[in-house]
Length: 339
Image: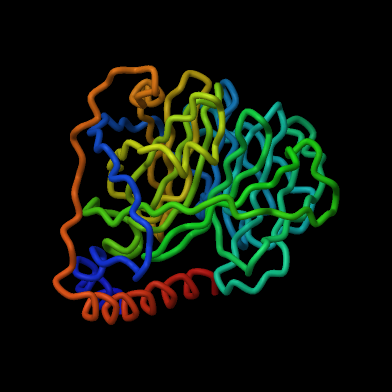
């Protein structure tokens, strides 16, 4: 079934859902991606969320391995662990804001949860609490959490072929009631991919699935990743929603990763990427040095004229049929991973 999906990927990926709004074509930047270190801790074989704080990295796995936050040094050696203070359903991302860790318990492969949740954690003691959130429309599967300078949590959904929803709480994370729920509102949508960057569990289709997010320490750059690429958005005023829905990102093709779901910024503006093991040994944590400097701000005069164009599909009907077949394949693969 995986092979069948790969065979149709190059065809269906260029077709878009009927009535979908165009998304600005990203500027492609061939940034140097270096290996920083390689984890050996089997507890993060399902590494899904990553964030950085000075000389420490915090890492967490997803469903089934998300009851522990691992503390790593810059050599990927484990220096400590923190027990998650609540019983999580499916943690998919990790953020650090004003000294507090925020675990994004937003995974919902079957799209049936009545609420999702953020878990707050003190990075020293591990103490924290549960903060439930509710979507305004229907259940969503999401793997990307962004917390901007204003403290408002933004969640970007994981959607195959279509537009990923951008949902935001108007309550800053520090003020979220426990246990809630607090309402989210849909603030817009974004489409990324498809690209020809290799990587991920499914060829081509994986480049359209948002699997993680991060905000730079100064709040001026927002990052989303797919299984294959990183997208960086300018947020000069710290507005994460506006950055995602109104600006043109740069796209950085990432090295071939088996199941890349983690992304984070360091204090110095470097970008970190990491992946699940995909059943093998853990891939390295990689670094793009000076990543925030690659993003033109509105006041800059950088030339952003080079972009990758997607050729139109030969036929909408054929594209839609192949998309349905491929979507079924991806659904099967994701369910198998969850089982």
